[in-house]
Amino acid sequence: MSKPVERANFLEKAVNAIGKKYDLLILDSFLQNKGRRRFNQLLAAVPNINPRILSMRLKDLEKNGLVSKTLVLGTPVKTEYQLNEKGESLHPLIEGLKAWAQK
Image 1 (spheres, rainbow, N blue to C red):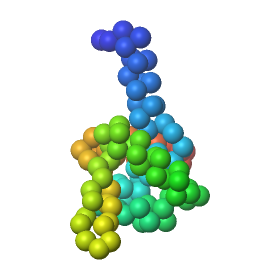
Image 2: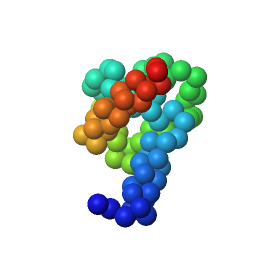
Image 3: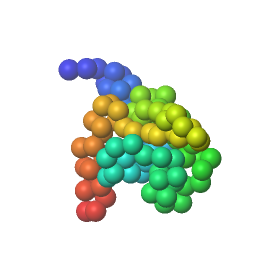
């Protein structure tokens, strides 16, 4: 079993990765609508988020290895986002949090 300090470090790492405002709502939007999502689709799906904040949150989620960004060549160039395997692994956690909140 890990030491209390190690357990606290793991929890701190998790909170830093998904603990900012809107992170869970963005991740849930991906989970509810499988596949790639465009920025405006996410903007419409996450209540009360503004474009600047969504952009910052997506960059952080990408940096933390939860979301992948893909450029689709064409005119104009399109940007699409999708959960990667690490992001998909949060599905049970997010569903559990939603169930807990309904109690």
